[in-house]
Image (tube, rainbow, N blue to C red; front, side, top):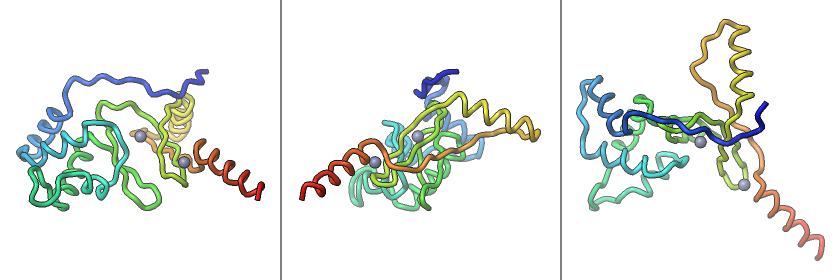
Length: 167
Ligand SMILES: [Zn+2]
Ligand SMILES: [Zn+2]
């Protein structure tokens, strides 16, 4: 069995923007400049973010491309419905990340620095399929978040402890 926890690559035929436009059309909505700006911004790089973090990074009031809070929230939810973003909860906070065109993965969440580390496990997928089969359950997805303390935080903890021991 493989012990490779790296993420697989996926290929998609449509760009996120094309996919979003298809979705909007199916809902009888039109793409707008505001939706385009937000999608462009969000798909520039892969990250884990919440709505408030995103609002802080976007242009502010009076600047070009300013998006109001309500627009950001509404558009993020549309992006989730369109299958472009996925949303999950960590400590009561809603976190978003790319779903479309991004490989399936799970997370380790560091409770000290709040970092989310990604990994993929074939064994986990096999376990999921086996459990589902046993219950005649049709799988549409899963979420696993391992909580704990990351390597870096562990190291700095040990350094601090060593310093204390010296005093
Ligand atoms: Zn950490
Ligand atoms: Zn992730």
